[in-house]
Length: 241
Image 1 (cartoon, rainbow, N blue to C red):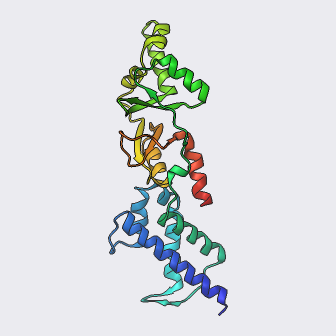
Image 2: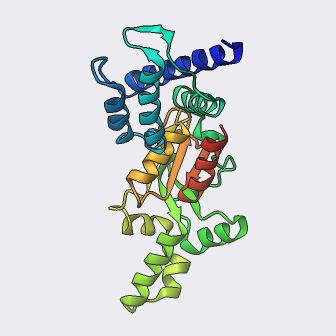
């Protein structure tokens, strides 16, 4: 048997075992759970597993085809290069997923809760940023979002209120109160992975931004911010990982 074929089978089984271990440790799957069931259950918790669900199920079947039942040392068949490389890539991204901070915007510009809507709009226009953390006594209390500011202004128009006065005089905290029932932002630690960030966005379609701090505390300075506009880039990183 050629050395290349031996290496392919060994590499495939090693990657498969890494995936199996990751599924059971990260997603708390029992050892008695079959590989395919572990994949299906984990796919409901994590967007990355869901992304590769069909491939993983196929790899489970292939694994059972290339090894002798009861004797994993006895190889019955050899996987192709393409298959081996693909399972190794998935094993890598599942076992050591890249951090979301690698994609997050690092330049964080925040505003105080008592700054007027007009001042916040000026900052957004000058920086091009549509999501700005809002502070009160050095604590993050929300995110000033351009879309939500527009909604608040629209309410003023609908209610025939003085829109000009609202924009010039009302503090940005007014907009936060208008949208306080909407779970439109969250705060996570620097350990947040790309797959976890994607899962957050997919599970909550109203989520507009994820603020990243060192330990995920509202009392810490942000070190990165992700918006739902980063979803394409997050997926791209995974594809290239």
